Image (cartoon, rainbow, N blue to C red):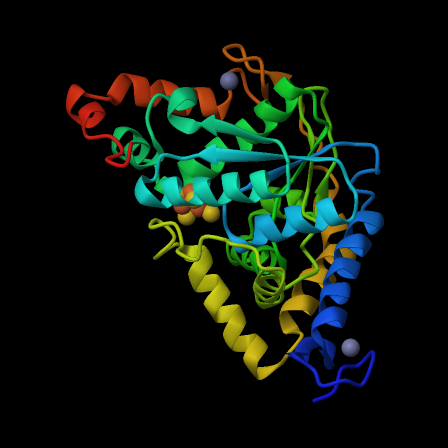
Length: 312
Ligand code: Q46
Ligand code: ZN
Ligand code: ZN
């Protein structure tokens, strides 16, 4: 196997691109894909500080690494979900990454905002853990960016994440979710910051290879709540299709973005207002996060409070 660019011995084969690359040309390929994503969707300009939401995993730290190397001003945001050792270790990875590169890292504790760490929220509300967690993350990312004056938040979602989300939305024909699925969501309200996903053109495998080759120390363990999540089943199904027919994941996502998404976008103009309780953006009177926090407050018993995160 020879590198497509220089003919030297290749370190990686990318079947969906029908290409192989040596290490320097693979990292160049990776950066080029990120650059293309940023330019195609006009995600941000060189003078906008990008708030990078980091989890300590390979994707978000690889993204932060590329943006720093590309010369963008960045700041990291770590949301401490209070998920036992997983949160402690992933926070340490983010802190070490930021310190080694002399970058600013902001840390927000979910329990301080919602009244309990994520594992307790399910017990208090009966809402599935990942659903409460996802809602809290989106809310707190937006709030942190507004508080600190940043106009754009970048997340490390890759091609596999995006294809799996799309697959899930199609399986249930969630037209709302389909209209919102995009590598870049513009700010549609002064209190809603732009959200972008500069890794959407790169697969999970490519991101893992890049993180490894760049010597990024990331948390390998998954969140303990990830096991059994439907998104994992969707990823596995897509991986089987991809193994049989390389490029199918790419075609599924890119075909949707180019051909189908505009149809779902039409007629989805929702009226945004400000939550009567916290002032953040919502479509109703009280935002979903405030409702969740209220449920936690009302249903938390002294027993659940005292059985909090044993790692803290
Ligand atoms: S962190 Fe949160 Fe994920 Fe853990 S609880 Fe679920 S949503 S799996 S990306
Ligand atoms: Zn080469
Ligand atoms: Zn609110």
